[in-house]
Length: 145
Ligand code: DQA
Image 1 (cartoon, protein in one colour):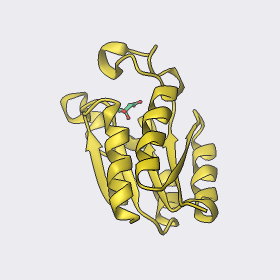
Image 2 (cartoon, rainbow, N blue to C red):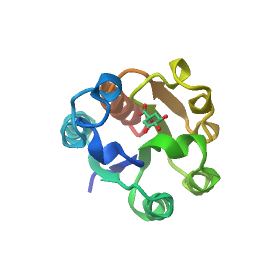
Image 3 (tube, rainbow, N blue to C red):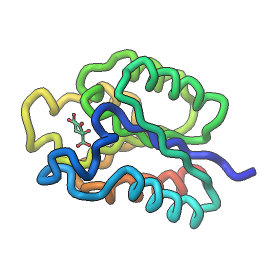
Image 4 (cartoon, rainbow, N blue to C red):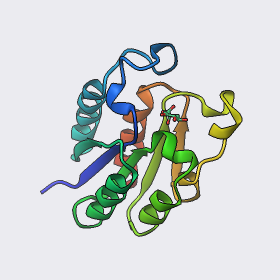
């Protein structure tokens, strides 16, 4: 069975495509799932895309990845800037973790400049739009080869 990569998305990303399109664009999470699946296939990987608006659910999903997944791609959304619990959960995961932000958080409000998740992430892609997810999957492909 091929290795699974889990793509985790935090709060409000269920509204991707409808939410502040001038910042996040018009593509939806379904579009992201489709693009990532195509790249995963190139590398002989499988992927699943999950989203929750609830911090504890994201912690549960990360814990589940310990049993199911070879790597995690995560856009923790607003929890990036606040959640020690998500950082702690990611620290229990042994595989590679890639962090993605659609917008360039460093060009935005000061409170978006700090990421707890960056302490754990092997690498981060920031400000490349939704294309960043597929770029993360490509890098995950080389890390898991
Ligand atoms: C985001 C940036 C965060 O600051 C914000 O809270 C989000 C999305 C991004 O992908 O650009 O919800 O993670």
